[in-house]
Length: 195
Image 1: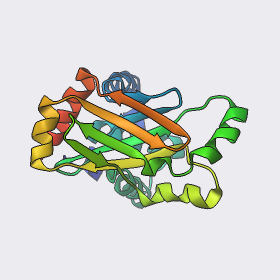
Image 2 (image 1 turned 60 degrees about the vertical axis):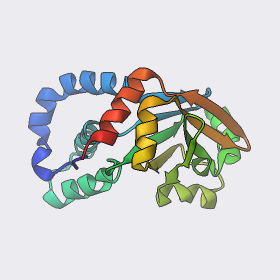
Image 3 (image 1 turned 90 degrees about the vertical axis):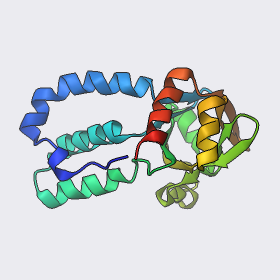
């Protein structure tokens, strides 16, 4: 899948003009790329469009205008775009209540190391977590955002297209499994077929 390039990025003024429409588009896109795992976790599968939007929003929020600052954001977020034969997702721990969040996050340390992709009954692929997600061990509580990737073989991709596909979290303090719905699976097949 292609990466975001500097020439793809709109300046602040141009982005403000198209932002309302882009925001509507990305909300709809993320609905087709989101999977809920239990009552506290969701994952959004990343692609060029989700990452482009995130970069634009960071530039907007931080009011970035220097080329090197913008390039830093591009380089950082491009890591989320899947490579060939790969799926990439951001896992969110969503606990709105602050007291519950403070109590729960220490129990979820290491959750990023307990996420699996099941293709039919034949393949189980453990997610690879970005090293930045490992910081939660040092702080003694789980980060609320984790970046995950799954590398698939050509045989696994063929099975992915035909078989039911599930995502599982099998952590000692949080267990959940959900089948990837057809509309999400359709998006992910496009990701896996892209060069």
